[in-house]
Image (cartoon, rainbow, N blue to C red; front, side):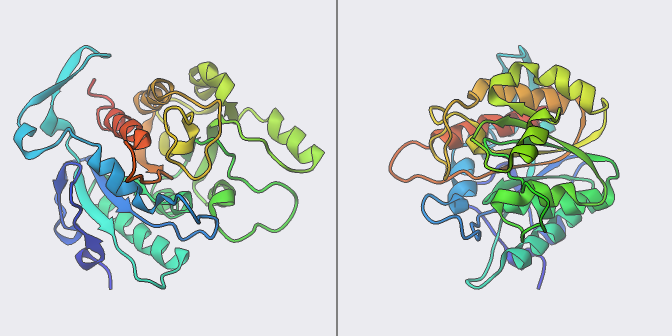
Length: 311
């Protein structure tokens, strides 16, 4: 069964909660979809299943009292009415105890399809990174020439001339690269050490499609060379791209990462120079013992996506 019964209303929503079957949107309105799952066997401790709840809990901007107010951005020194950028929130896509990644992913893809048909743009809160495949698979069917901009500490690709293993977090970008309709991808913030054969690593490091964390200042010029301005772009952000000082709440933290300021600035560049057709923010682990710094960073990141073109 598909539809509203698959979604659970969150304790706190980002924007106005709506039921999928009755979804009413303005053109290009963002629609938040929570995907609170970690079905990948690699996730054991510190899983991202609580990511959507943590992000929503750290997002203070669309409470009932403030909806009719304006909000100003000190960095842009401009203000905009909250209603101009308020998203819809479908809640969390629920799942049963024995659901597989493929089954859950296809339900997520169906929800994305319903959002796009109604003129909206999906903003998925993960949950594990493997789920990005299903979102992009749907958007690539409806948007030819789609570019993927991928922020991550890890490459999430499979090296070597061997058959592609089944989908999981560690090879999700290799699966995405094979989707019809995907024109290419840019990978930003990578820094974790890579294992592989010498020839494979040499080819990988020579590719202009990769921008390491130490090269983040070159991102605007590199993207401008690689992706034609105005192209349709899907943004996928694994929050371990952030340095652990900014976000320790991930399963696989890697030192020497981006700051929150660098990530927000980079995402703003993408949103302002390309046609952003969808986005996901994934791999945030919840934490009940301390302030979730990653959730705070994700909240600011999501706000930069919602305000793109307004500030």
